[in-house]
Image 1 (cartoon, protein in one colour):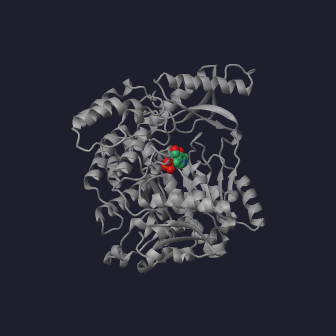
Image 2 (spheres, rainbow, N blue to C red):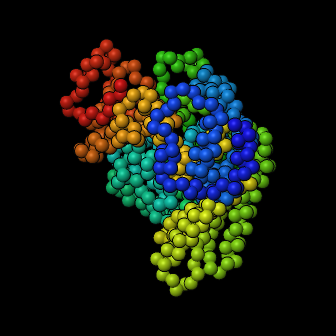
Image 3 (tube, rainbow, N blue to C red):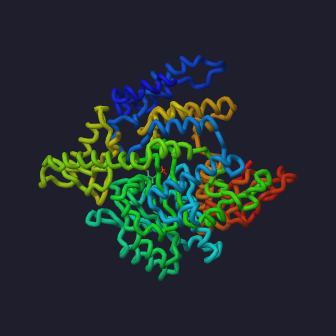
Length: 578
Ligand SMILES: Cc1ncc(COP(=O)(O)O)c(C=O)c1O
């Protein structure tokens, strides 16, 4: 395995960076059922080389310029190996004191590198926690903000709550709002323009918020961008947070990619006004050499998270937690189990030191600048949006007389051609109605880390998608599940991080299915059922998706077999957890 990994890194440039396989290539080559008897390691590794590698889009290739980079390092790799080695599940302090305290230390160190005020640090009055993704960071802060707001407007006032972001905010924001039970008609996506480099205008925000307040609605959450996915646009934190705070909103800054640049003094001004916001998230897996997935979330008021997300089952009770002298990170996140991810960051911070991490950011920015200058020097191309960090947004524009449709078609063809060579992988976006090519990623459990694949869709990693489908069917087969749960049949399976997430996504589907049959405002009629033995995060998940606490039935186990008798005739049943 170690030889395979070393050879992979040595030869990574020789692979087509964007996998050239067709959908279904792997599923057709793997058996429908898992082997009954063990297979030799060599046979498995041979299949990795012949079956998996051709379906990999090589995220670590120096020819990968798509999306944002997904950076790694030897130090991060070693930290990850140790994390896997310990396999610690540090949901509370007692379950792994080292994991909890190292995470607190590393989060304070990173906050210090970003020159965040002590308001965000454990050594001050706040603190930070490692979430898996930005999506989860936004989800937990939005749910905390929602619950705070509901204490003012009453539990039935959820349909009055309004959230705000720009039209450049990552699409995950709308998904998170939906999960949290914010009505789609109350999600404001405020337009931005090329003239303002796609940053959100405080004036526009004020106009929209004041109109909502006049209509009797309640502003609850503002999601700001420090580096949007399309063009790395930055929203001015200070004036926007001022507007939001006049209306008592929770302000979150999504700095998933570009936040890392703020460890360099020349980029730190993008965080000006950060003391006015409630939370900030930044993903070191994007630009600080850490492996996927690792999203750092800092909050000024941890109590708001803990109040919303804490759980206290009998089997987790312990002296230290009860004495309030420790941090229990399970109360800062959705799920319970958590990995010892701070080891990765600790290794990186110590092995590189701040100076070398700054040099790494600057080197990437220098290369992006060089590419930008090449583009500018070629009259056939133009820079569409001024570059701020390591992402360059440009397009082919050979003749001013070409209509916009024709220019878009030319650029689509160019991108298809470039990507079909397998030599370079770039992506596109559309901003202000303009089709733009973008390049980023100017870069300086072992196999999974080795590939560091980010397989969010089939194309981003065909092998990862098709292997997951195959394995899920294999496991279903071993459990003798009916075919209706398999890809071979009409269903299918997916690997989530935690049971809590599995319950969350299914509950949201159930909730929205029932709500389409009745009025969307009737969320307070929905009732969910479990026994008093149901895993304790069920209640937390219900709260997250907006099921009223008074509608969560925890049925004494002695009558669990009569559960149907407990169903209220006046309510819509959303889910029964067995
Ligand atoms: C600015 C920004 N926010 C949010 C996300 C979503 O991140 P995640 O997959 O960690 O939820 C991305 C992903 O690229 C991003 O670039």
